Length: 118
Image 1 (cartoon, rainbow, N blue to C red):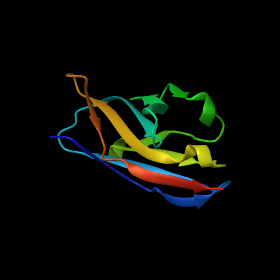
Image 2 (cartoon, rainbow, N blue to C red; image 1 turned 90 degrees about the vertical axis):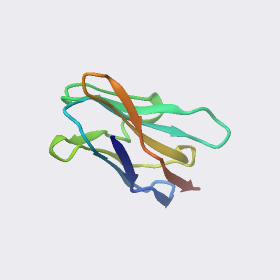
Image 3 (cartoon, rainbow, N blue to C red; image 1 turned 45 degrees about the vertical axis):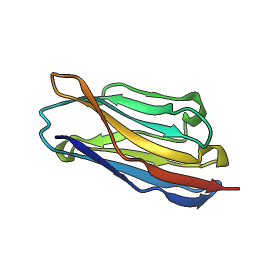
Image 4 (cartoon, rainbow, N blue to C red; image 1 turned 60 degrees about the horizontal axis):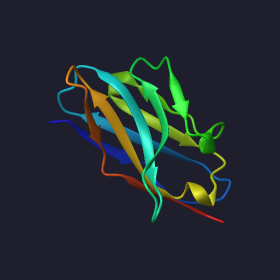
């Protein structure tokens, strides 16, 4: 069984920074792709950033380009999301996702709350 655990969320003032982390544990032979999604109160979950397993390609939502930068540490099965110049509209629960192994199964973390005050 694969489990993902996020950390690093919190309360920050507008213009501040946070760094989210997501560690995967369990039987993992390879990570096909990984990403971060978020859900604001009353809104649908949206994709924020994702990366191929090898790290060669990354994509970002237009709203976070230039401010967020997804990265990974393959040896630790960990994906990061440093977030700079945070805005109140970045507030939400951030979820980590990893698509793993030959089964191409996607796993999700439990989420970590990010609150940006104005």
